[in-house]
Length: 255
Image (cartoon, rainbow, N blue to C red; front, side):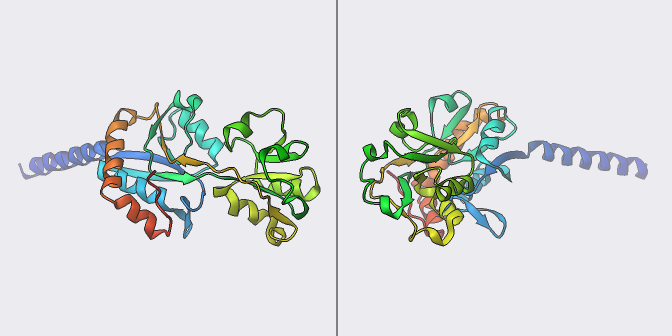
């Protein structure tokens, strides 16, 4: 009789563990370095947008797993639902066909700067001065509507900041288009030449962009988009998002 009781209890405990495991919701998130909003901290994903999503997941009863991945791979994977969510994805109609956009969680400065040889600094004082020059840009990046859609500009596209740096150094291009949030990564590739041989032109295109999280429409949690959005909004309204930004010495821009 005692053996039967032990078997029954063991079965019940096993069933309880399986039931608990089945209830765990794992949110698969992709990360890429985009300081000051996302960066590595002791080799792990960190920054305001990572902390905010971790808190949203906790409030919603999710366990979150992070994967470091280049953006082009992340977009490909999220389209087919092998990734659930990506922080800091710009909205466009093409992406909206396979993504839900959560937020915005404030706004970020998305100014476009133009890095060039010191002799061209004052000669590039407005957009029209770019005509007649060869402009290097990062493939897949959105700078601003006029720039991205302008087929009259002589643009050369590159897959990485190192390739852009080599193009500028070799004279393959006259100027590099640099989104402000990517500035440190581009300058790293040029080293000490920035500020002496290469400087930023007088012309700056000023733009503010809403900060969205992208949720795959093929994610098993796509139906929870309104709930996730509601949690995110309550964290904004309570001041917790602003506090997270402050801990990282980043200004939270609500509008």
